[in-house]
Length: 419
Image: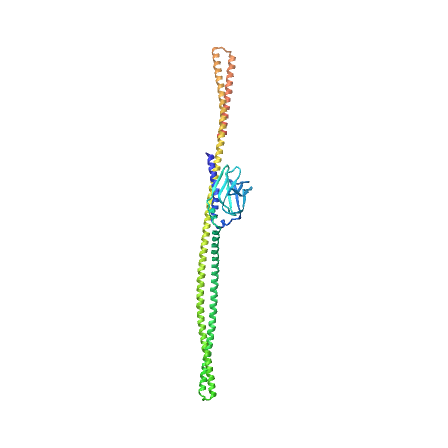
């Protein structure tokens, strides 16, 4: 019964040791990256031990479609590096073999470079198989066109994100450019206003001069020369008026242009800010989502670490229980052997005691015979004394034998009962 319990504990410890392998392999199958490893070299590590001690010379094989596609052997530290050339995807079988130990087989095994796996073997014969639930083969059956489309979608999404970032940057640069242009327009407007004011002042001066000239002309007669001078003066006034009106219109146009430029700049700046804000918000939302995924991944990793810690503790307890059971079996075996030796020694003492009792019975009969001879007077006195002394000496010898038997018994009790 004890041996059965020890076997159960060892099997339980094995199950705890390979559980993380099942989880690690299942988690690695749902990404396009794992599917796209076709035709690549995959390298991973395996550590094989027994009760915490490394196993040297264990054969590690990767099987697919009934054939070994990679093989390796553990070194003195129980480590083996497995290299699979030109891996075409799909699930495999990882097999660990060592003479004197049960063969370990991990079915549904997904190859992933850089992975580390630990195995703890069990002594005995036969095969221990662990199946990993996996959809990798089903996923691998998808057409190359589907995978290409998925890659194109991801590439477009990535390109769109990069374009959005560039657009946000461009919008920010445009907003700054518009603000700079608005400042330039304001400065130009101020210069135009100053020029318009200067032209208005000149126009007023010209008008005053025209009035003076009109007054002077009014005093002259109708002489042809005066008419010519008047005509020249009129033409000059017309020219000055033309110059004045053009200056006024130019000033008004500068003001209108300024207002239009300011409005356009403000509108463009507002649009750029809104667009930049929207893009910033979208980028922030994406960043927050990434942070949340990272947080979830961290929590999942923490949970896995706790799970591994609990499994390690359970395996340790199972190992401890097995060792206690083995120790109890050894103690019981030793006690049984001691009991057997004790009983055998007691048997020898009993046989010695029985011999003493037989001799004692003979002496009793010899005493009875001597007493009859004395009673009937058929024996000489000296002979009677000699026979009587002989009987007494024999009794003393038997008493000494019994004393020795009692002493041997005490020694046996101290030797076997105290252990």
